[in-house]
Image 1: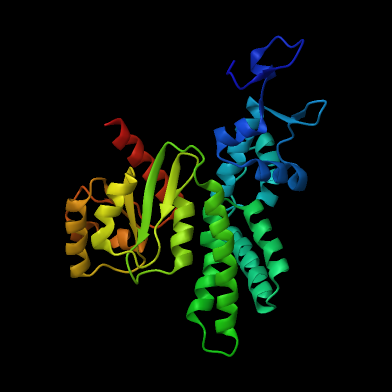
Image 2 (image 1 turned 30 degrees about the horizontal axis):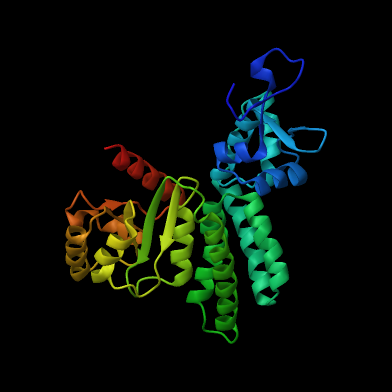
Length: 315
């Protein structure tokens, strides 16, 4: 039995009686306690054992159910529909929802966000924001619901009032994202990386969201402010001593930038990694296997970063 497990009295089979508190389940699955409680209250998912004082204790089967739920959510299935899928799966193998169903769910959430923004209704938007994160993991919430609306408002500002709508949503999301970044910082993670935007190639919210997508229980991400000169990053990294420096950009590469990246890589005392749309197209132009490209998909970026850091620290 693990040190964090709890043995119920009078039960002989360790496989049946090993129970874990919610903080340990959060550590094992990566799902925070607030979300676990929301799944239980709102959707009837994962019903843990309760102690006399009301504390939740989860069995190994409960933990596997949490992981199964997370697997469906990562495919883009709304958490409100996962319970029915799991119930069908227990009887027969249930086919995964179609891409059209998933897209339809995301569009409904996007429309709810648009309506709140159109009304400049911050309390209502805050409620929808919380519901989105109760329904989807962080990467899906940002990439499929929130950022498409933000991007749409940014591009289409030709009509009266649309610039104000974008500013309203941008201000709201930056405040909430910064709050999330502060909550996840300095939680005893194994590694720390520095994230910086290539000057004039992204907006603050895009950098903040990338920091959230890259970070996690094992990686602490420290953001540098917009406008950070690339030529001074070697000095910054010398002071901060991170395990890696991640450069972010959503613009295509230009020859001058390629040369600058190579010079920066030679000057750094830590590995240089790239994230964002730039990293999807720059690999061949760099011709440098030392500079690692993480891509732009939030669910893959974090995994690739963790795999790279694990291999780098072990070597």
